Length: 95
Image (cartoon, rainbow, N blue to C red; front, side, top):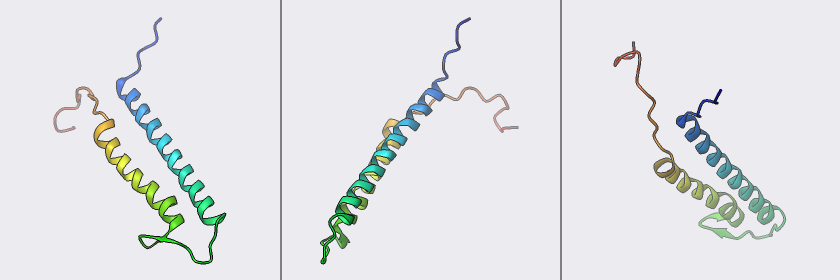
């Protein structure tokens, strides 16, 4: 007995979920590492500022989050694919 083939919709959803999770974990690690190293291990009496933010906030929070916004737009418009959901058996009005 042959195993049924995996639904393309499930395969696509799994691929997209794994990609999103990996990017989230990477951004979390970057944010925590940079913020810890620049903000906690190297405190200064007079903090340096970039665009009005303390330098550790700019490099540890603002930059990674800006990158996530760009990645999210690319992910939504280029990476994610529409899959055919099949025929609606209930009829055109959903009843």
